[in-house]
Length: 341
Image (cartoon, rainbow, N blue to C red; front, side, top):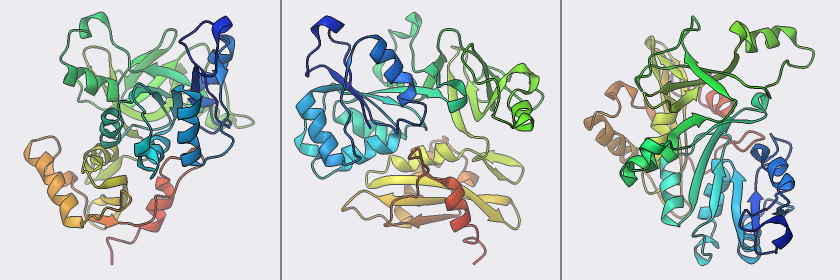
């Protein structure tokens, strides 16, 4: 179910040493469109056939895979597998999509020499509409600043037109601070939902496809995705960005997986709760995560009122959707009463 290609040789010089491997379920946006482009280029694929992470690592090594497509959890499972340290992954390119790349996971991948390439899109956008791309003025930037843009900053690809708008459909300022919804136009967007005219009208209100993702954009034209509109936590009339908290928690060395969800609160409407899964063989306490978050409060990166009201340490992996994202709907239901007990 996974495929592999390479761009290192023209089609008439292909060998088993030149491969790329999209590792996402093939029914879901077809590996970010990778199969279409790679077959047209005459490149080679490797289909792994099963989601066995030790076997996939072995296949990457034996077939000299050069490029993988996947969601963040797949990268996490590859890097934390017991067999992972014995494989040299330097130079491997990981095309990330499906959900935001946690900062801690990005840094872990870079420490192994993996080049992470972020993209953005939806099933409705068929799928890619933005990628982590530089313009000429950015090439001389310090490496640390460039890394930050490669990790999170996105630019629209050719023939995709993206805006970030408020509730009235007006562009928000390009100040890197004001949050709005991403809307898009391009020639390959879905025109409608099958036999669902009401949902179609909502998708295309104002003549732009509404993604349901909230973001800010900066003066360079980069879009910084903050959260899903449905996952933003509304606390006391203000927004708390769950992915920002997840990013920070993910940088704690012992953290394997993390999800932050909003749960009902009698006074504030919603408050954040963090569910944290340690890396294999590691132990974490709630106080350790609280102290880690406070460092970012003290640096002014997040306000103190954003801090989760409760941090749950779980030994079980997070529930996943069919596309291997943390299933926040399940988590919200599971912990909906945690602040009232």
